[in-house]
Length: 254
Ligand SMILES: [Mg+2]
Figure 1: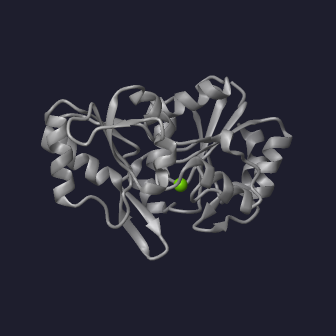
Figure 2: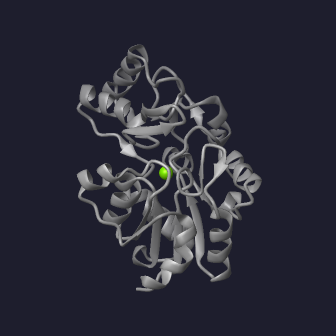
Figure 3: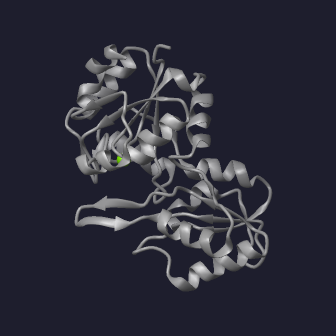
């Protein structure tokens, strides 16, 4: 099946920190011009969609707020009119504005990034008690680690796994690499999974996840890409590219 849609991971693919990857804006513009449907899909749970769109605009990368898919949006539709306890940064709360919060007996618990070095044991215990009382655990993603300018740090998945282990219940994962996340984006774009290409720098979450969901994949060697991670994973992307700038030319190979 020909590729009709391109899903772009943001951090590590289009930018690292506050700096755009060289020619990222040009590459996205080329994809627009060639008629591909585009989505920016990120596990970022520290910023609302509005702020992500503003950052892309500041870097001259042509993706608007409607083009951005986040786990928070998926969580909100999953919770619906039920009650929830939210463990998310204050900065993300505008994306959860319609949710009814219950801190004592919530029907859902949402685990997102809370800043610092993650969840302290007291907070993990509160989550554990809610889940033992019957709350459904939602995790905005389950990444193992992430890259900051000073090196690698533990990510949300470590703390979600602790809550799962203690309660012996599985969390529903609303970000990459969950197949639900990729299928939801394909549905929004009106393409079959086999008509979509996922571009990412995380071999497990972006590439492995998208392959499991039936998408084609392109791994870029920017951001958190490390050759040894790729070897260890055993995952082979359809395309391996030096950076997003090489994608417009490489698409003809698929
Ligand atoms: Mg990334």
